[in-house]
Structures are given as structure tokens and as C-alpha cells.
Image (cartoon, rainbow, N blue to C red; front, side, top):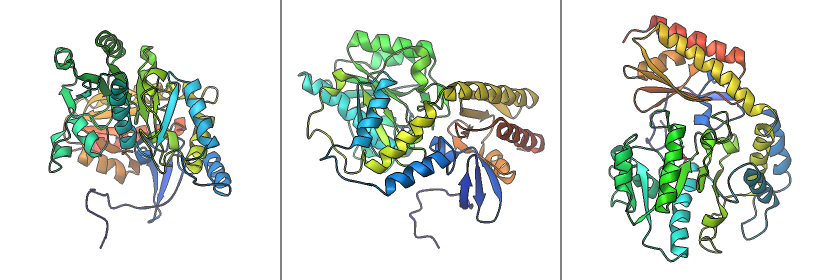
Length: 389
Ligand SMILES: *Cc1c(COP(=O)(O)O)cnc(C)c1O
């Protein structure tokens, strides 16, 4: 008997501990974990450097309040701005809070320049920005909003890839376009660089803001610090979360000076956001990700992984429809429902997780080793070989 609310379809498997790319179940089985808490444990399980950082900070100070100066937060914000487009950072505790704060910041900016009627956010239909009331209506997904009315107004939608629809949906009330640089839950769909460039142009022309949700694809997962970096564009607002805490709940919004000017004392707040314990872990994660060659290695090893997966796709063209994604944010799209395939992988001690459009998400830690990728390839190949619909 479980006393947890049944809002999850949980797998009947539970873990005692984890180490790097592996999880060890209470039944004594060893699993190659290519879920990693859904792209959260960016440095793998119980990473010694993170363990040390959290232990050290836990003996000093966990939590004060944003009523005081928090040096660990100052440090993390400074490092994030030095390495990115951003001038300012706001800390939260989760992805949904970060995207919701991004929406507030966009609206508040137009309010602050006397254009409060510009307050609508344009999003991709069936995208994912979290589970708060505002962010479920931002996603425009029927499944996520069902039963949670009344509708939170202020969001308009266009279909993924429908460029005409996007242009048509922009009107005088549009404040911002908010999209995931790579749609995660939506099926690992990458927005191509030329599209991002075009989006930036449209936003400049219409004087609206570009919000890129990098909660899942950011913090090194793509092989760049941010997934949009290859396109060379600069967004106005970027919510992040998953990977930045390495397993500790951290959310943040990065933004330009212009946009940040709308936020004044009292305009937003969070009790927990940016506390010393969380920020120390965030700083430790950056110590690793900013190391020389760390991102380069992700590029190299992920290229190898994609190539090997494409070989499997070529050998099993009736099972695997597409290998998509970027860096270590990988989607295997099947021709049929992926449930059984994921279960078969699990039976062979490889953990993966679903996304929309029959996609299996493959999310190794950013510290994954080549021999672990080889093990995953071997298991995926075996499951393909034995696979019956
Ligand atoms: C996971 C995710 C969120 C929500 O993050 P939570 O921490 O679950 O609230 C928002 N946007 C994207 C793109 C995500 O992948």
C-alpha cells in the first residue's frame, strides 16, 4: 500500500544507491542509467566532487533568506553571466518556476515601459514548460490542462514547424515568443539553427522578446553550454533548471539587462530560491562543466553515440524510424508504441524514458564513458534483434 498520490505511473523498481552512470536496485541488480533523473544528474550519481561540495557547505550554512546578501548566489550568477548572453540571473527551485518567472519577467518588462497591453506569450502547441497553472496553459496541451480550468489566459499557439502560422499569430498584444530550443517531452525535436535565426529576426522586427526554455537541453547537454549557441543568436530570457543542480533542485532565469530593468524590489520572490546549499552545488556543477575540454568531450562522445545508433537504425529499419536530438539529448523514434521496447531495455538493465511521438529518450550523464555507451549500444542491438511487436 502506497500513501503517495497516484499521479505517476511508476515502474516497479527501486534503487538503493547510484554511482556515476549506474544505479543499483534494492534487489541487487545493476542498471545502466540513461535516464539520470530526466537529464538532471548531469554529472552522474553521487559524483565525488558534488558530494564533497554539499558536505562542506552543509556544515556551514543551508538557508538564510533573500532578505540578505547570499555570496554563493552572487558567485553562481556572476559565473553564469560571464559565460553567456545574460547580464542578470534570478534563482528559483524548479523548471516550472523558472519558466513561469520568465513569463512574468517578459510581461513586467512591457509594463515597465508603459506597454502593459503587450502581455501575451506565443508558444508551440504541445510543448512543455512545466506543471504550474500558467505553464500548462502555455504548453497548450489538452492532456495536461484537462480538468484544471478555468483556463489561464495570455497564451497563443502555433504548430511546430508552421512558420506561416507563427507569423500570423503575432499581433500587437504579443510580448514574447517562448519555445524550447529542443522540445524534450515533445519528442526530442530540435529547432534548427536557421529557424532560431529567423525567430530572432522576427522578434527584432516586431519588438517582442525571445524566451528560449533550456530547462532540459541546457547546461552542456547539447555539447554547448546552451543548445541555442550554435545558431549564434542571443535570446532575451532563458529559463534553466534540470542539469544545473546535478540532482539538487535549482531553477534559474537568465536575462539581458534591458529585460531585467522591469524587475524591482518586491516584483518577484522565492523563499528557497538561491539558498546557500543549492548555490554551492550549482557552483560545483559549473566547476566541472566549465573545465577545459568538458564540452568538447560531450561533442565527441555524443557523435560516436549517434553514429552507432544510426547503424542500428540501418540494421533495423522496420523498428527504428529516426535517431534525433543533439549531444547527449537523444531520441530514438520507433514506428510503434515504445512502451514494450523500453521495458525490454530495462529487462536488459538499461534504463531509458519515453517522450511523445513514440520516442525513447536516451539521457546519459554528461560524464558518460565510451565503454558505457558501448554497453548501451549492445543492449539496444540485442533488444532490436529479439523484438516482436
Ligand atoms: C522539465 C521541464 C520543465 C519543468 O521543470 P520542473 O522542474 O519539472 O518543474 C520546463 N521546461 C522544460 C523544457 C522541461 O524539460
